Amino acid sequence: MSRLKVVFWKEFADYFSSRRFLILFIIICITGSSITYIASQIIGQDITKASVGFIFLKLFTSSAGALPSFTFFISFFGPLIGIILGFDAINSEHSRGTMSLVLSQPIFRDSLINGKFLAGLATVAIMLISIILVISGLGLSTLGIVPNLAEILRIGIFFVASVIYIGFWLSLGILFSILFRRTASSALASIAVWIFFTFFIYMVASVIADQLVPVTHTATAEMITKNEYLKKMIMRISPATLFEEIAVAVLNPSVRVFGFVLPAQVKGLIPNPLSLGQSIMVIWPQFVGLIALMVICFAISYVIFMRQEIRAT
Image (cartoon, rainbow, N blue to C red; front, side):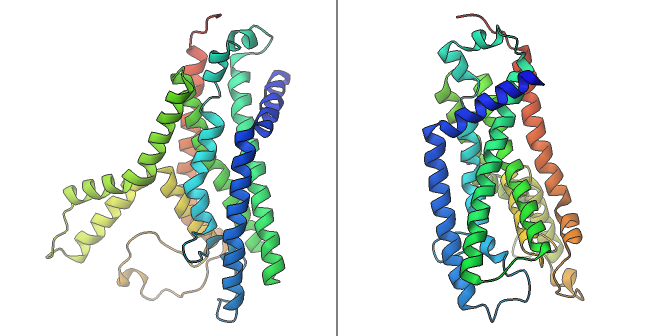
């Protein structure tokens, strides 16, 4: 445990002292604060028409003109944070010739990779909680509304989901930093996976769903529903889709289902906001899937690194 702490604090200090992290952190803070400030102005102007309760959560979900919501911002740029923190975690040690030197000390391999991963997660957590506190402060000053306990808990769940989501991309960056000795190759491979899961997964899901359950002008409602259901299931292999569904359901208590819904499926439902426990039940499969993706990706990295041959250079 003492060896793990040594690696953790060393990597933690390196992350916070690196210029790329500081620049990225400043950009995210400025952009997130700007989005939230404009959204708070819109909510304040229309506060009499807003739904009773959960107004504070709209700071994280409201978009203003060309500016997206804060949840979309995290969904889109969060992977880049994880990739930037992890793409050179291991191969940079090889390129500097310090890997064999570090492992010649009383530090085990598992302590090294675990310390790097936990330091990255801690860095992401501190960065996200700082941005959320800035957003909450702006909301308090502009709206004059204090969040209730339910809103605070929902924001906390959103924070945990954001850390796990970015943690997946951090573990992916670490995986490619183990597989590739060049930092440029690991960065390009990580970005390629991000592009696929962010953009191309929608096209792939549509093509597969249309081939298996074609929808024509004579298609029935049941066929359309099956097509949309299959498309949504394929898209859920993407961590971005899982995170978006978690964010939508947690920060919008009125959300009960995802995807295409027939009028008959919602007939008779009372349009009241769900309780926190009910919202958790809605997102529980997505939450477990997101955790599983992060754990599996890091486990693969762990096994490969433990079996990798390291020679003194």
